Length: 292
Image 1: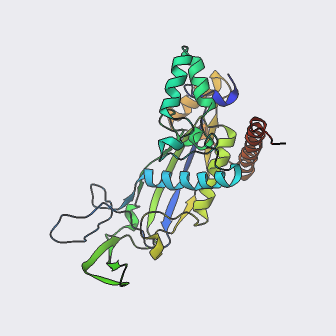
Image 2: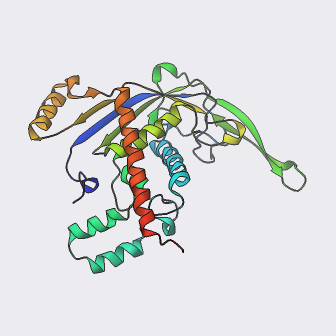
């Protein structure tokens, strides 16, 4: 089996990424319309203690969407390389196509290889209905020492598209988390190939440089965030004894179980992504007939 198909059922590497996500402008991730007689019409999502948080799915979705847009600019709209997870007809392999493979391939090993061969690039890292995600992000919880319940309320009004004026009876208010609020950030990536980590480095850099907004109200200037990362920690097992030593240190709370990722390694992962993309593009070009 080719290298890119290995590692789905055997632990071989782990990358831990932690840091702080700061709100540069006010943030609104809504919880739907409130049914309470008092309070905001549109509150933000809160945990059991009434503190705001950012769902991990919101962060992951924004990151995935940005990476998919980048890849479309590089490889085009070929769904075998970059798909649209929101529309089944635009998946790299649809359920109907999987069912056809099941009829033709009776062995599980052959079926798995055939499905993975059709899987788009982003799904290798972020997962799909037929493939487990290697990327795990926790809900981003507000740092308790920096939170004092300082929600803000803003007014909104629906605009009549014909008169371009405020619609009667359409005044509402919505809740936001103020700028300067810090949220704890933690991601774990297991068994990722070097090129997949390169893809992740590009996506995280977008958050570090305030290029990916979160939540609603972005046309109003809401949702600008900045990610500040701690040194990344990485472990890769070359053999059984190395993995055993890693597990022993992990249980003992020994931080030397991981090595800190230097900047040069991040660049190597990015270079691995570029090499992989060139290979995929070359392979795809060979399958496209050239008109004479």
